[in-house]
Structure formats: C-alpha cells, structure tokens
Image (cartoon, rainbow, N blue to C red; front, top):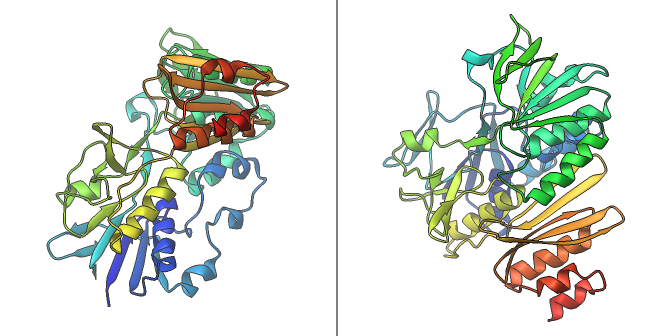
Length: 402
C-alpha cells in the first residue's frame, strides 16, 4: 500500500489530505501536527474567536468524524523530529514512520521580540495559534491598557477587537505608516482613520526601546524616551516559515522551503505547500501567507502527487475584518506605480493598483462587487482603462465583457 505522510496539520495539510481522497487515492495517509487540536482555521482567531463570538468547534476545518470516515490518521500533539530522505522515514521521537511520498505543510511561526528588551515577560503575546488566543483572552477586560507592536493586519485586527471590548489601545509602528509593507498609502489612511474613529491611538515612525516590568508588563519605553503604561503587549511583527526540519534534512531553503513550479522539493518524493513553501514566480522564489494560497497550492500538490504534472499559478486573495469594515484584496500589488480610487459610495471604497496600464490588485473596503470584478479581471489578464474604474457611472459587470 502506498504511504503518504503529511507533516503539518493546518490549513494546507488538511486541504492536501482531503484532496488526495477526493481524487481517489486509497493508500495510507498520516497527518502529523504539533498542536493537540484537530486542523482548524486561523483567521477567526484574531477576530470572532478572540471576541468570544465563535466557539472552538466552529474553528475546526472538518468535523472529527470526517478524518475517521476518510481513513486519514491524525497524529496530533506530536512534533516530527527528523526526516531521512534517503530512507524515506519521518521520526516522531523514538518512533519511525515510513513514507513513499512526503508533504511538508509546516506553516509559519510569529516573530518574537528579544528577551533582552522584555520579549519574554509574562503578558507579552503573539497571535498565531488557538493556545495563543486562549492564553491572552483573560487580559481583554474594559479599561485595561494594551500596546500592540506592529501595524500590520494582525495587529490592527487585535486592536479592533480590544477597542470594541472597551480597552485603551495604542499601536506602535516603526515604519512611516501602518500597512506600509502590504498596502498603498490610501489603504493605510483609510484604516488609520477607522481606528482613530474608534479611539485607538496609532503612533507611526515610533520605535520600541523595551517592554518594562519585573515579571509582568507594566509599560513600554519608546525610542524617543517616552514611557507608555501598559497591562499587556501583543506583538505582530510578521511571521517566519517553519523550515528548520527541512533544512536539517538537507532540503534546499530559499525564502522558505524551496519548491519547483509543481511543488517538488529538492529531494525525491518530498513536496511542500502553504506558508512554509516558496515557489518560482517572475524570476524569484515567492512565498504567500494566506488561506487561499494554502488551499490552492496544497490541492495542486495533491494532484501532482498522483501524476497531474501541473504548474502552480497563484490567484492570490486575502481579507481582513476590522470593526464593521470588511477588507477584501485580490491580486498582488508588487511593483505598482499608480492607484485609482473608486468611490466612496456610502461606506464602500476601493483602491485599484496599476503598473503602467496593467491592473495588478484591488483593495476593496465594504465593496464586494469591486472585489469580485477586480479578482475576475486580474485572473483573466484584463486591465480596464483606469478612467472607467474611477467613473462612478461605470457598470462594473460591463468591464468583464470588454
């Protein structure tokens, strides 16, 4: 019987295992996950789950019986400790599991602040796992003071939850503006105002010197010498791919676990997908940190494991929920030189990223139609005249027929 082992029981691992079965694979599938929880979705952790509006069971990607019905063996709460690509085995401590094909869907880990500046104090948190959120939830009490280090989407989502629950919230961003790495100045300005309207203080171009406290946090000192009182701190300064196990096994590492366009790693019968995997895109090794990529790439790898021999062509999409605003993003804005604004129309507005005459991406706030039209245009390789996008009289659906 052919044996497939998947290391990593998150979104990508779950999608890969399910796709193998839906494509008719009837061999052995074992999925290894370091967390004790069954495969679950992460995006609600910093939104509905943190707010207490979503129960643990609703996080699960599949009902528990699905894995048994599909004859997929879950080894949860157990971290793989070594891979032997020559012998085709995975070690779980003293146990050795053989494989015919191995998939690495090991995900990513939040970057943490150094212990030397207080990063190891109690009440300093990151937002990545269910355990992270369960640990910090007790801190979210009205009137408590929260400092968030990092003005990316994770930090801003946590700020929105905290503000809704009545906390005093300050966001520190070292760059000149929030969301600078991922969004245009127009999108940054939109969310800066949104948070200010809800009482959140955003300090841009502001560096952290250290977190203060003997055991627990009691404040933060900024690079300019100011001290802000704080009861707890959330760190949202990005994530790093979990590629250590692959590197120890001798696999090629390049911005994560290197793969070719089909998802093959540098060793025979080893594949990778999701946050941990980098793939060729426009002359570089691209990594995408999103649910959409985790699913699409994992499902392609599953098909290629069974002989499909297809290249991965990303169709990126992302989203973020903050207060009553739903941000939906289609495409990748890398290399944009022009922003076209559509709206506002009530509380809906969208920003369209162009490189010359080529449409690259769309940020749509409370405008699902702009998002859906933009996504379909990008996937079809169509780039409407920017003047038509900006004209409120333009029928968006007509753009798809042009």
